[in-house]
Image (cartoon, rainbow, N blue to C red):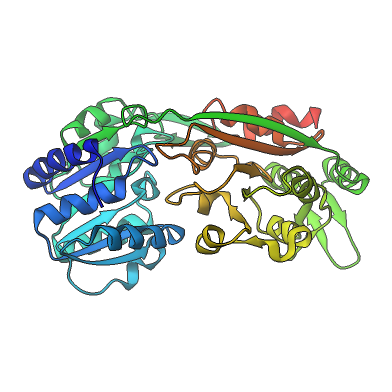
Length: 408
């Protein structure tokens, strides 16, 4: 395997940074080859044992890259949920999709586990993400706080860091007033510049054009009857199960589920009530190889009701057969390639702007000229409202929902 020219250049620049500071942040956009670049840096650094931390669905592709590159070091690849199980010694660690450790003001369990691993091994560290701070610059602190030489290491916790790098303000939620730390200052990125290599798809020579189309589906009368009842009465009582929406958050979630044909009951059971969306997808994309993204787990059941054995949830089977693949948006939006798909089809849409921008790029390769993305929305449903928000790089929040409720 040969590196692309820009990858070789980044490897050389990255070696200089990691030798000087002990860590490096590769802020390379999706499909530009972050994995091979990181492996190349550690290979040239002459390390012996590398730990690669990523999302579960990305493990297979990382192992494939390692086998193709055949570097001198040994590699262990695990997912973030298994950090607490890590044993052995490593002289290099890669934290893929590092923004998954970006919670603030308190660190996530992932960030805490990562810090323990670093403390035990004192390794060279490479952090990678195409979207290092997707929602707030404040997300950078806990991504790098395990790195001994990070630019914020004089601040022992996020709260002390925020006094210098965050425009903290009071936020009222009902009668409760809390501190909001989302307004991180641009000086955070400035402080990270000596440790960061950023590279875009445009710089890499990608010429892909992404086109999107929204397809509206008439749902069954029962779906509209249930959503109307829930909106007006905030409860639906069946013979054995109850759908309860006694808060605005629950109402937003339940309507989101119902408009796409599924529901999760108060006791935790789920049910498919309308397969209209799945039927529309099967009819529209017949004889095509597609990647389907869904939001709620029960939506996979709806797809299986229609597709049966023609649907898989594993990347290996998708790549080696004629089956279509169904992935939950949050777990499938990062670290995997759907380059063999003719197009992407969204059974539903997530509230997160990050999910929108990351997942729609799963087909992109350097040689591909066009990505086609289709959104399957229920007529009169909530999906159009969410789409309007996330395409403007804003999460769909309770505030948006309360404004939209009268029109649903």
